[in-house]
Structure formats: C-alpha cells, structure tokens
Length: 314
Image 1 (cartoon, rainbow, N blue to C red):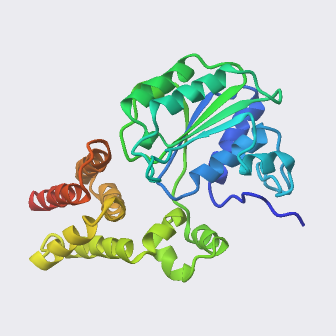
Image 2: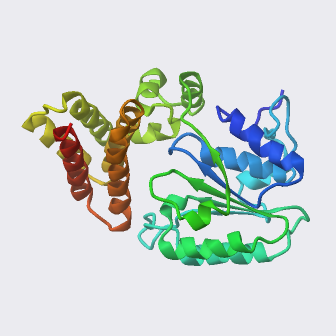
Image 3: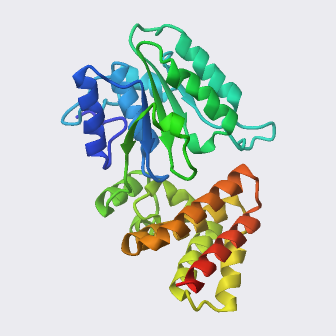
C-alpha cells in the first residue's frame, strides 16, 4: 500500500469546504488559512495546492497524494514551476529576517503575471501574513484587487497581529483549530518526538510547537507562565521575578510565554467576556514585540504588567 506523502491530521471540515468550492466551479482566487501556529496550516495548504496542480489522491483522502505521485514529488522538492512559496529569507549572517520583504511580494506579483508553465493553475503561498510589514501587505493587495485568471493565492495567518480589512474582504477564510488529543499524539509520534505523551500535554493541540517546547529554556518559560497563572491574583515576588526572567531571555522564550498567557486568556474570555479586552491587549503587545523590535524582556514586562492590572481591577 502506497503511503500518503502529507497525511492530514484534523482539519477535515476545512478541507471539505475548500474542495466543495473547487467542485462548484466557482473557486475564489484568494484564501486566508487562519489558526494558531503549530497546527499544520502549511501542510494543509500544500496538500490543497498539490491537488489543484494535478496530484492524484489515493484511497479515502480526497486531497492525499501518494509519495510516488510525480506532482507531489515536484512540490516537495521545491521544483514545481507553477507553485511559489514565500517565506522569510535569511540575512547575511544566516539568521531569519524580521519580515517577508516587499521585494519578495513583488516577485510573487510578477510570478502571477505569467501564464502557467504546465497549463493549469499558478499558485502562491504566503507563510505568513503575520510576518509581513505594511509595505508588503500593500503590495499583495495588487494581486488581490486584480487577480489573473487561473491563479490562486493562499495566505497563512497565525492570528498574532491584526489583519487589514482590505485584505480580509478580498479573501475567503478557512479557520483551522488546534488538534484534538488523538491527532496531536499521532503527529508527535509520526515526527519521532521523544516522550510524545508528555509533550502532547505541553503543546495543547499544536504539535508543530514540540521542538520549541522541548528545549530547556522554552520549557522553563512555559512552566513559568503556568506557575504565574496558577498563583494569580496573589503571585508573590519570587513567582513574578521568575516569570519575567524566563520569558525575557530571548524572542523564542517570550513567544512561548506569550502563547501560554494568550491560551489562558482565550479560555477565560469564553467564561467571562470582559477578559477579551486583556486578550486583545496581549495580542497587541506580541505584535509590538515584532514590529517595534522590543526586546523580549521589555515585551514580557509589558505583558506581565497588563495581566497584573487586569487582576487588580477584578
């Protein structure tokens, strides 16, 4: 039996929605694929792109191409002429740049101006909207406003920053959710993660975060956030200092810390809607850390102050 190249874990309903739009003959030219990081949005989008580009599904999965399919092989080797994947590039020091550059988006626009090399679709994937600056976002509007025929754009969105209404209004949106326990464990096992059962409890339905959370620094930041939340509203100085120290070590530890806080606030907002304002403020701080180049310590201090103020007024 041939293995599926990119098996799907969860997200069946979103996949069915997209394929139904395709089968209707009225497929929209741009799709925002939205959901928290680490849930498989890039894999989900790549699967859909492969089917549009001619990969043949195998078995019961309508978008699951087998490993020996020539189209999926071209895509996975980054050799398909009608697919362009836009991500942050490396700088001269070998580190990821802060943003997807406007020049990359202009290259994408030029790619869409050409006819499909193989006579089918031309597909672009931007991964992600959260990592684009204002110039890049304005540049992508050119393709959204004047979509060429047989061209489709996927915009992956982790929902960590506000999205321009002019972009959202020109796109269809597929909202993906965190995976359930069974799917989370299946992904971790497939990826060969050690202590998968323990890690499943840390990633909270986002198995793509496993590598982040299994490092000693990031694990400490995650634990510090949970210890802080357990101790609130009466956290002592030691708990507060430890949270600030662990979260403020570097950008990665802050993002892990912030993720724990945001997940808690999201759940809390479902019980008490007034907490949604705190969630939005924390999201804003996360965006500031990236866009205004705050240090991890500065951003962690702001988020901690916001959380303390919220507890003090309740």
